[in-house]
Image 1 (spheres, rainbow, N blue to C red):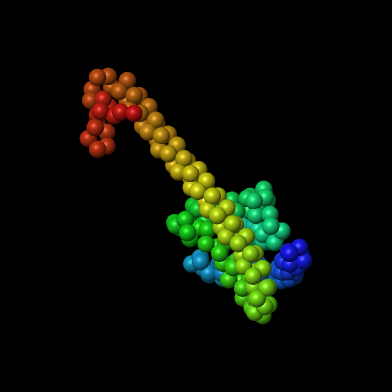
Image 2: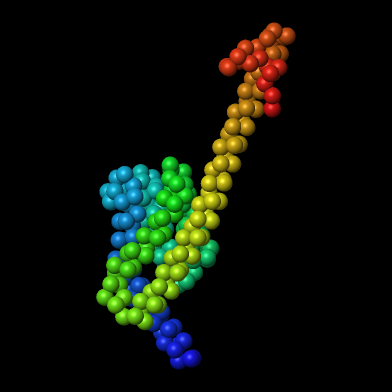
Length: 198
């Protein structure tokens, strides 16, 4: 029993070693698949300047960090969370559904499967690969949690803007009323000052 467990650990370490050796190719292909989800396609990453193409810059730098954390089974580390936040924040402000915002994580499965086609024919290796793919599922759950937090912050910012606009409008109405006395103040939509409530 102990020997079988030891063999499983050796296979997962071997798999992680192979994935570490293929890091550049895997990260490159992962980025290509992510780029395809943008209107500009692969040209999206031609310009990786953080000022002229901030989203491309964020994705290019953070995906590599995320891959390293994934390989070392550190998907709930502070580094991984920060990388997810950077990537998802750039996607959450766009008109994307929650699924579209976090689907980039699942694209890693496709890339890894394609890179390891020949090794995946071995049943034991395929079983270890399936376990490793469980990490990707966990990473996707983590990404969805981050997405939810980002959307909550964005919604709170919008609510604060609406409140600020309402408060500014109320102050303007009060100044107008003080200046013109008891006269009815017409405002957009046909309401007077007395009908405007908090």
